[in-house]
Amino acid sequence: MSLSFELSIEVSEQYDFNKQSLDKIGQNTWVRSQWPLVYFIQNETSKPKKIAYVGESTNALIRITNHLSNPKRVELNKISIIGSDKFNKSATLDIESNLIQYITAEGSFALQNGNFGLINHNYYQKDLYKDLFKEVWNKLTEKKIVSKSLTEIENSELFKYSPYKSLNEDQYHSVLEILNELCEKNSSRIFVKGSAGTGKTILATYLIKLLYSDISNTAFEEFNDDELKEINYIRKFQSKYPNAKIGLVIAMTSLRESLQSVFRKIPGLKSSMIINPSETFNLKEKYDLLIVDEAHRLRQYKNISWMGAFKKNNQKLGLDDTGNELDWILANSKNQIFFYDAAQSVKPSDIDETHFTKLINDLNTRNLELKSQMRVKGGNNYISFVDELLNVKRKNQSILKLKNTNY
Image 1 (cartoon, rainbow, N blue to C red):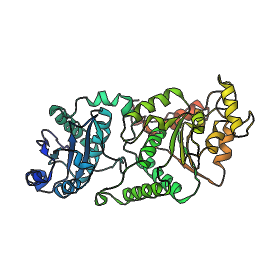
Image 2 (cartoon, rainbow, N blue to C red):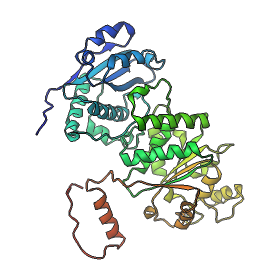
Image 3 (cartoon, helix red, strand yellow):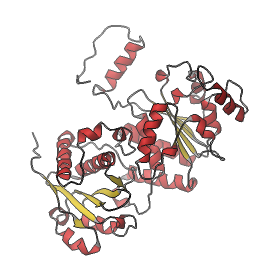
Image 4 (tube, rainbow, N blue to C red):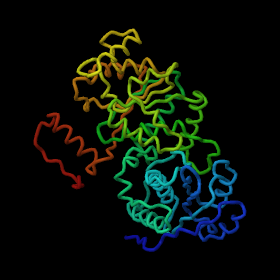
């Protein structure tokens, strides 16, 4: 059974976003029928950058009225309603999530949205709704609300590393476990293991944005139980660590520079949050939390060009030349989250795996694992096959049958 989306999207005129316009907005076909819809509120004249908010609702008039009572939202002055007779609640959640991701990376607007509750929802005929989202984007382009194509956005660094990413269930449940650990323990050490392509960097950027999220004036009635749990964890963490000092540690220069560029463009984040291991010494007090992406790239006192500075950092902690960047992170923070994959450690300067194994096996360490493959259409079986092949683990030459062949 096929489902046609031809000419089924409507993007309304831009209504004035104020209480005087509520009657007019209420006459919109989709608003009046309390149909699931998506809306886009904006202020094109705001400086230094245009600001906007993306939302969805099945009772849009009440939701919009609530927005007009939000001090942040009253900075906005125009609203567009996006409706379709093909929309259902799952579809609008999906389209809202995609709009948040793509509008953020498109760069024309600074979004007021937080990134909590962004999860890939599975629902009936989801694949067909991908075309519906393309049509939504085309309509927004025609109305000159956005200007870049989806392909252009997808090829951008900001889209690749944006903290506004819809998480798969594997990642989302890891987030809930991480938040619970941070909130319940006075000092947490968490290892998140996962092979290449399981979304470790996405999860790292998502977490730092999440923990800085403004949850005031959040419409709790719009969220499910897991999303409410996520928001309550954020509230508890922010109460536990007011004005939390959080750093995202990146050992590799190229990735660090890319993430700094991304963080400059995300409201609520700063490029200074992305640091190298030496910069963990910069604060007079310990960091409340250090998130370490690609922890397998942390270095030891070997085969590096800056041995003098490395030795001085060790001396600050009373360590000899056996001290390493892992020691610095543990000493300079109250809580740590390490994203780690031993298989990606290839340089002589990388810390020996035994240092991590000791921590991973410690009873005070919380261990999580990401298994869902995000990059390769062949999925987890294909990745396992290649991993076993490269590591000479396959005992025979049996052929792996793959459903997907576009790699």
